[in-house]
Image (tube, rainbow, N blue to C red):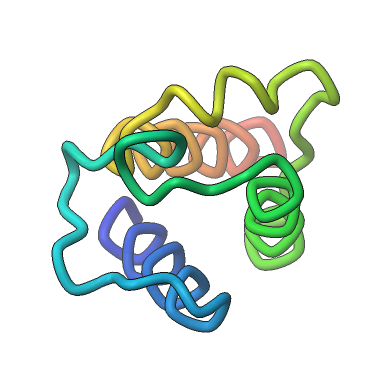
Length: 88
């Protein structure tokens, strides 16, 4: 699941016209990494929510900006797995 989430996130960043050439799991989403601004971060969050059926809390946006790509994809994969097991 984590690989699927990571692939989706990188594809969406490319679709949003960000350079994904050097992105790895240690690249931060915010400053000094991908450098997503708040609106772009919100756009990415909505895309992930729509694709994986998640909902991020409004107050999570600052946390997301500080996360690395690896941390973000792990968090999303864990939430998807948790939601799937809750539904079972």
